[in-house]
Image (cartoon, rainbow over all chains, first blue to last red; front, side, top):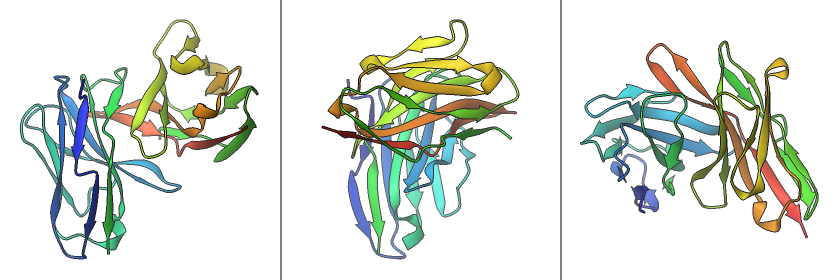
Length: 114
Length: 115
């Protein structure tokens, strides 16, 4: 069972470079999420997608864009990377936009912007 | 506003000792509550969840949690800790503010286990 797959696992960018983090889930989930995790700050929601074709901002959307390419895939793009975007990024999915369904997480992408 | 507080940033216990990790929430309605565990370098894995019914819920890896509405708490417990339980633990509450449904996360508790 692949679950939620994120690529790449590690990435180093120079300030101003762009990149896309890929995420795919094989559980036929409707909802998908992008979080960033920083020491002492827990998980912060960047963007989420309640269903195919819809996306919404989370707590910290500035500097990011997302695309819900289809039901399986939800990508996160950094157009012009900044050192403040150095973080660990997690993609997650859940079965529906409900409160009582668990979220399944990918293994994370460790991004360093120098 | 909805919030989740994990008062303990870091806890150290000896292997074989009992464990209790605290979680307090602020939420206007009946909460949906979750505990997740994150091992080093890994993603988050669900330990257990509470929606309704029995206030004592059992999870994986020998963990349990008790929902206490009067105290707005959902503390995680384990009778005897194993070295492999060393990890970061996150409490979360399901939030629905209009159409903006998402999980509200605590900042986590880091657990170290002494041999």
